[in-house]
Length: 541
Image 1 (cartoon, rainbow, N blue to C red):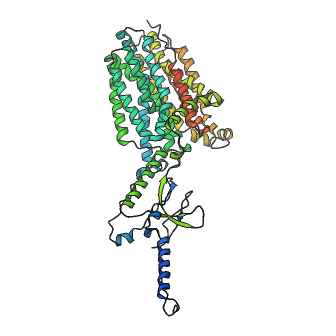
Image 2: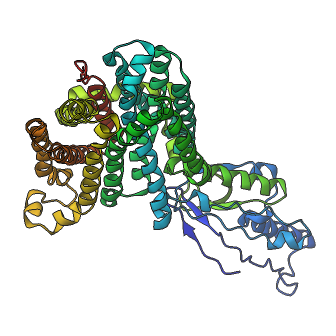
Image 3: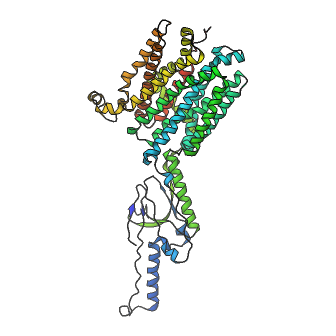
């Protein structure tokens, strides 16, 4: 069998050590007449011992077999290819089948179709979480009548939802790092479904608030974790399109919630708002459970190492060794056979779970108050997000009092938010390509990988929010057609979208090592200001 050697990066280990064995030739009697029979036997025994030392398949002493070395595994690490032909010829049973490692390859190398499917499922989940945020407002009037509370008090259900939505990711993030995205996705998805059903069945205002908080906790991963999934499967230069779809789904779902649930509340009861969502969310979680694949690279690498180590143990139990020629640390030029096992660097460098939760809770606030860039960008996106949540109460109030719209008609105006989200998402998909072709953009971002390139279009598009707000305030009058304030809402949505996408991408590029903490800081501020928005319908008559 031909010999070839391939050295592993950072492991000092060689794949396929030389299998061709030198033949121990006995000295001829004519040339060794002076040697006695005893001397010749000692020479042959010495040669035989050298042969066994050089070739791992014949190693059999307990000390050698127990000499295990651990090496760091990467996705591109070459694996040993043992030759079992000699032991098969000796009558041993066939060795165990090698494990199927196709499910444990780097997500960056996945086929494009698989990546797109993962993004589609993730974006739908994001839309479902945003839908839940916007779906609550149409049922407020009925809830306040049923429980004898003011509509201002009933609107606290939106506030409490965003509180759970903002705090939960900081606690859940370490679990996704250890166990992967999918288990956390499914666990919180089940919580999301159960609590939606509890919202539909509750008989008290307090029960509604408790259930809404847990709905926010469960739905938070449907939004915040999707950004991590995008980073898991796409490199930085390819993330603009999936991030645009993710951002578009967040705003589209927020508008689609009141648009749809306005009709449900008017023609059925407010309870079906949450019952319908429980059914749809169950379908989404079911699709995730069946079709979604783990995307976190470090978790896949750990599973790959575990499968390989288990396979090596099974081989040894069956009488087969998986040996490799390893460069000895004390003598780098000498290669010795060793049994090998794999380990993952990320597993060794990871701190305890409690320490990870502490870091996840503390570091975002440390960055928020010590990094001016994070503080001001978080304030910017938080203000725009508060405007978005403010419209959930403002639009029905204005349209019902100014244009005498019914509940369903008033919430139909949120179609403008849906249209604005679609326009903004489609437009942003091409913005990076346009910026590369634009001379001014290249002048402003002299380096193609500069984080500031993410802000070029946002400088102009964010003005749509200001224009939309002024237009809404000055056109929502009985003598002006209702389409004018609807267009204003679409303009404001485009501006909010551009700010949200730009801040997310910019912080991710600017704080590479601490991107998750920087994004957690802005996410907390964004949801906090969204939760503290002042309900505007307290003077409704």
